[in-house]
Length: 123
Image (tube, rainbow, N blue to C red):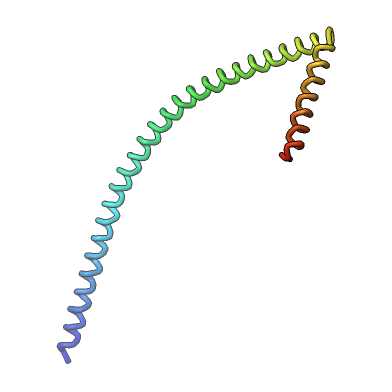
């Protein structure tokens, strides 16, 4: 019976050694992960800085292109308004050619549609 407490003590000591080794390995693992995490964090921070610089550069380019396009649209709008005003003045000054052109266009469209129906083409 004296042997049993000795075995229990040895088992207990062995378990304590295993527990201590596991704690040491846990600390080593956390230290290794912490080092890896620092490396990953540094890489991400560096990529973020580079990405921000690229974003700023592209943003300026896009803003310049946007302003140029906006200017072109405004110029086109101004030209369209000017042309519409000129046509309006011409129509008011001399409406007969425009009325004749509209009547001729309507007649030709009607003639073409009537001819298609006579030939059996219905739309």
